[in-house]
Image 1 (cartoon, rainbow, N blue to C red):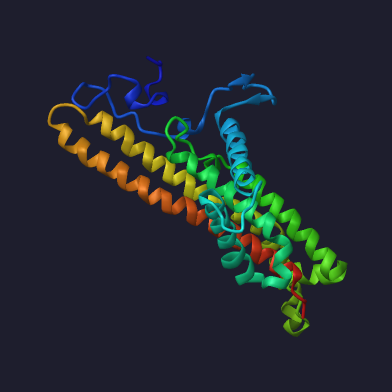
Image 2 (cartoon, rainbow, N blue to C red):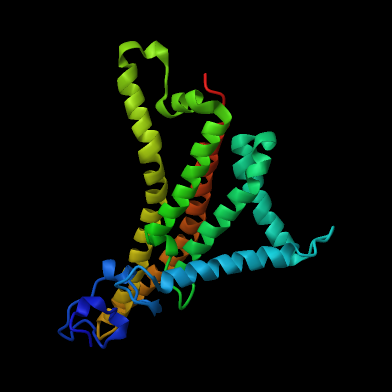
Length: 273
């Protein structure tokens, strides 16, 4: 057994209630993994979340390749599922926000982003994986930075240098003496806070959801002793309830992430008045 009991999960030990051992609650250590390859003390290594991100990318690419490599006028089951997902993002996210004329060229980017985020979230409830990749802040931050670069570059491209600055700073000469303060606040909000909150929203939801699932899972095992069995059954029921709830949250957070992405892009393409 590890010298530090907080570093192991309850079901990895013989620790139960009434055995004289404390409850090994989940914490930040639940999100730390030993390198599969390389040295964790160096900048070059490969761990479980990286493996899941790679496998998730391969699964998504493989799924759409298999669905559309030989498209049929009357689609088969796989093609129908893929078309349903693609059309959902295209019509309900891109077209609804940007319109068909402006939005069509951005559909592939948004669809890829949606399914990647969703797949990274889904790892939370897949046996053996049981870890949402997006609960590691570096991943949603990286995705948010990609969106940020697309948004900023499109703003400069569509509106020019002066127009982009007005867009970022909320320039409105009717504000009079308050204009400099408003421009400073808007610039800070748009260029610094926006990408951060875009990443944090996804990260925080998946982090919290994973902590709750781990907490109730550990509790189910820890309470499995004597009279505690009655409480263990309640805890296990909560595991099932939280798993179903997480399925909804995982899809919702992927939807919110791409909806905000499309909103930012739409703002970059809109004429500044």
